[in-house]
Amino acid sequence: MNIFLRTIILFISQGAYSGLSPFAPGTAGTVVGVILYWCMKDFSPGWYALLMLAVFLLGTWAADRAEALLGRKDSPSIVIDEIAGYLVAMFLVPAGLWYAAAGFFLFRFFDIMKPFPLRRLEKIPGGLGVMLDDIGAGIYTNLVLQAAVLLLSR
Image: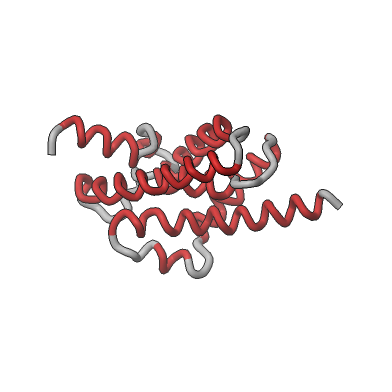
């Protein structure tokens, strides 16, 4: 593999190298997700969904190849899954600092705790397995945030 392709794969899979953080690389990757969300928060739902899907597909490809490059299944430095998961967590949630912060903490909770069936999803081989448990954590987070929106709007 040429150096250019290797650099692109690691840049994407490591979330602009945030995954190289010596402390809590998953949290550092989620911060990149927050920044990306903040840039996308005013997009129409269709454009947001399209970009979210693009991050998922590109992330699955990059994570799959990064595992081979790094010689390790779901290396802690691979954080594109946290970025994609956070984007899922915030889909159709009202834009605002409080929701973004709640989404951050809830997403990290679900990502770390891996409630059923998330732990099973991460056992799927390759980039898809890397991505799916975090997409699931994003879905759980989104459900909690949507319930909060409904309760607070009463």
